[in-house]
Length: 404
Image 1 (cartoon, one colour):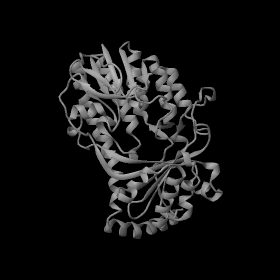
Image 2: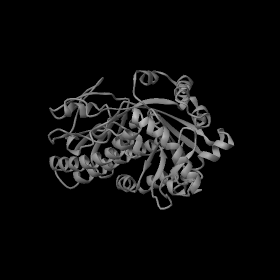
Image 3: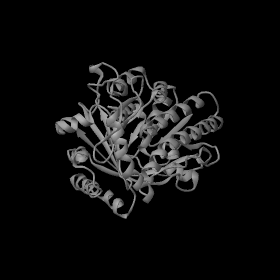
Image 4: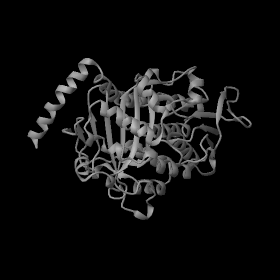
């Protein structure tokens, strides 16, 4: 059986690696010319995602991944703050967590290695033809396959072809992200943020997530000789969030230090304390980026709305998920493992039907979790929500002080 995978992101590479390990004739096409040229900074793989990945790649790949990952169990409990930096509360105890944070570049590099020569870079797919089916390219001869799988993200050419239109829509939030070395922050701010992740909330839809990543000090597997993470010390990976509007959408055209300054200006106008913004101000300007949150429907029945056939899709191409749950990449890996499993057990049509049924359920569950946070942030942008947040956060801060 010949399988063509369109898209060399986490889901597409996971699928390619799994199919190759089981002897399938598989080719993965991606428009990038370098696997390290990828957006995003770190992703979280929970136990389910790690188990799925272990089914797709060799054990040595998993060992190198864990040696390059930052274990959540070694972090302090997550924190919640207000815009003044006052502690509001804590997240759950992570000491029993099996989840791992890993650089997206590191994971993509490992997966590309597992796919090997079956990965074709610098090939832009322009369309799909049911005749064959065939994959069409912006340049070059079409390629035929027994099965075509779209793993080409939220703006998927394959899924749009299948669904007859977009499979997701803007979620109402513009996100901004960057990387800040812990050592570059002032000592008071290092002490406040500590070795944990946290989220700050405020009126008018402004929020700031600060993730802690340390693949060296918090390595999931103590094997320095296997480590290949691009993050080499304690680092904060932050994500600022603002409601989408003409003003915030225009920021997406900015880059580097200009974008960094614009983000700081917006948060200062919303009366955020300067110390809470230090993690943005001290970030590497080249790491600062802007992106729109896109989301598919949270109803499982709405996902993959096409007849089962020899063309399908997975990951964000079907269930585009905002990063607010930290589960999008993990869901794509689980999609890949599901499809590989069913293709080894049944004919193509039956396998795809079983896979799509499982994917719809999985995608709906992940989206529901991610959209809870999105709706919570957007609720603070209403008159009532802004007032409730302004009044409630000082009370929560006072309660937190009493508990200490």
